[in-house]
Image 1 (spheres, rainbow, N blue to C red):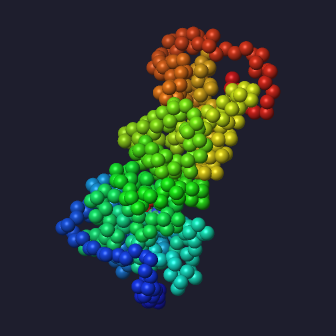
Image 2: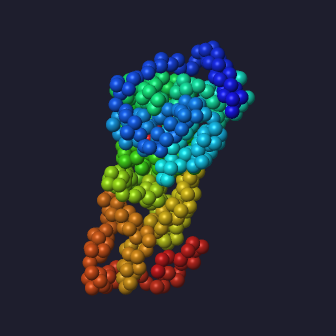
Image 3: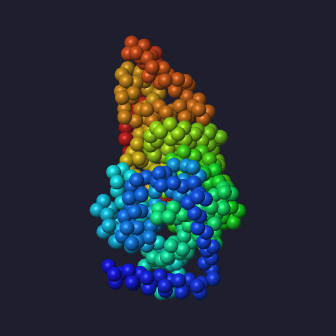
Length: 461
Ligand code: ATP
Ligand code: MG
């Protein structure tokens, strides 16, 4: 333990010396804001986060609340989670807490678990270019992207390795001061998102920072500083180097933040939406106006549900975001003489497979998306006991909501949405009358089904 600490101290001195030689790294002008000059109080911080901070401090490590926790408290918001930065190495943190686990490869972190609350503890990161340390583990790709970032450093270096100035504020529970290395407080006052260091270089290191800039700008209603904004238009294609699974997570963070509509508009403005959803962007540009209306209405509804604390399923969200591409592909398949249902099945398979190259879609969601889409063809068929069976389907509610969305966006479905609304409100007797009336609508000649001999599954009965 003592040997490790001495080694860390020597590392720090060495880091300090190498940093002094570097000119391209942003220079810090540390400001320490005393307790009486800021509004953060310990009672705003969750007790699990406080426990982790105190345990680390009592074990002679430095520990600070950092990132969104400090930023959001300064803005009078409820932080989504609490992140902690420390000079203890991940293994040391892991040894201190029984309820913790080591995670991540690109960034080694520790998660300390308190029931459903997870406190993320990260060790101070150092400069990855420092030659003395590069033999360690930090590497970058041909595009300048950081592949690993497990080089440890001082708190000051850690601050400059963070993305935006407003995310590089540290709150200390020992003396209740805030450490501001990058001018974050000033930017909070100005309500600006500003990357630390050279924007182009920072985006190349991690292109996801472009999405994070949009996310924070939409969430906090901040503007993006001109120099931070300018490179995004040209660098948006760098997102193609990011693993699809990470982008799926980022899409959910973007769209489930309660500001999805604003986020979507900004993503399109910066050419980022097309990177995330290429086929939908193509259809949005070429297709009818109602495509855009459908997506925007879905996002308005999503924001509303989040405000009301209702759950939102990624399957519904993705079903809406990909509907323009799906409908285009479906039409294309039908125009090749494929009957509607197999044409829809083939289209959904194709659209999902191609989307997974950009952002992955876990199977449980893609399965539900297909059901929501396929039920659009089943909802018009209501005669006999079909309506009853449909209404009991686990995906009925989502499919019905989706149907309403299509109508709201301007598709003429012959009053089908209203029919289903009335049906759900009615008693059994009225429902029977309603389904009898629809008999002429959806009874199809049996011969037609027999004639189809394609490879795809049979149409729904
Ligand atoms: P929120 O949790 O509200 O979404 P946050 O700022 O806490 O916002 P996290 O993703 O939890 O965001 O990350 C915690 C902190 O880690 C950030 O505030 C930032 O300082 C740093 N960070 C996260 N992602 C990056 C990145 N890609 N590049 C540099 N720093 C990052
Ligand atoms: Mg956070």
